[in-house]
Length: 264
Length: 223
Image (cartoon, rainbow over the protein chains, first blue to last red):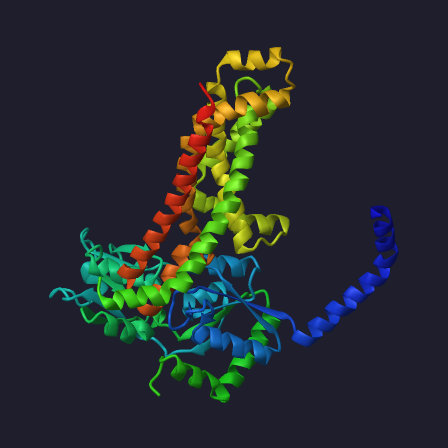
């Protein structure tokens, strides 16, 4: 019986493979090529999970709109952390990173970045728990003090700014919330976060005190960008055009309002 | 605990249960892989059965598996090996394979120690009775080995439960990652992380209860 089945498959193989090829071709044409986007959940309101475990947030809605414009099927890959995201992009496991990543000169040297959201950042909020020490007006004032630890999300734009301060003790944490907990439990004296998250964290933790730190022109961010591989210029070009179209149609503004990133 | 915390725990329960289920799935898959490989490596490197070349190669392998941190092994399985061999492992496969293979190094040590602890007379008696090498191992040596090394195997399984939280770093939606997601949305870290800890306690309690049950079942084996 088994022999006959194998024999049947052997003869049918050629015809079946043609049908299979045609089916794949048809299905690909119907749904378009995949657009694999790397991101990391646990970063509300940009990317998080809802009560049913579905990915939600500004970046998810934006990625869906972008994939639609590109006529491709969106595939979300949750990669857990910033270093994993950049590694995956380098290895070609994903087509793009969409995770509220600030556009900086240093990042632009490594990856192609297409602006899609956010204002130009000329200053960053430095957060303290309950009080800002009298003698602290900028991160440099905390340098060369072994007891003054400043924690920051690993791989973030803010980390790049803090790492440039000579003699400053910088501690990397995985999430912004971890940094807030470090402050709350006196594990660190200050942290620096993305300005778009400030109102949300201030509302939840009124004890947070904010010190605005002005950035040098070379350190300023041009807003949030989609990271793409430098080796894939056609995709970068298509993404650039699609983002411009979404901006002109006002779709990005609507999403920003939906997720509370700008006032309605 | 106030009513807000209870409401939060209640509303977070579906996601936490999903995460716990993923943790259990990973744990079961990795445990089978780890026990299987650990048994093979342990038998091949025990004093009675060792062969110069194979045993040395396996001992070297288990040494590497124990010496390299699990997090690094995970990154190698997820990012480096697919790049070298062109195989794209998804987060689940990379997670259970890396955890299973990494733990097999420790399992092999436990199994090897357990087999070496079986007295020489047991091997000789089995041989005298005309048992084949397979039957000697299956019916005489391994049951005695299991009784000896069950506590250390349980310890390793406990460690594996905790190691699953490292898998959140590659985005696998296991218990810790689910907790992180809820914290980012609800901004109530203490309540959520304490609930996550309770889930881990529960999983560990099940592992330990199963181990105690096995110990009782094996108590007929006299040393």
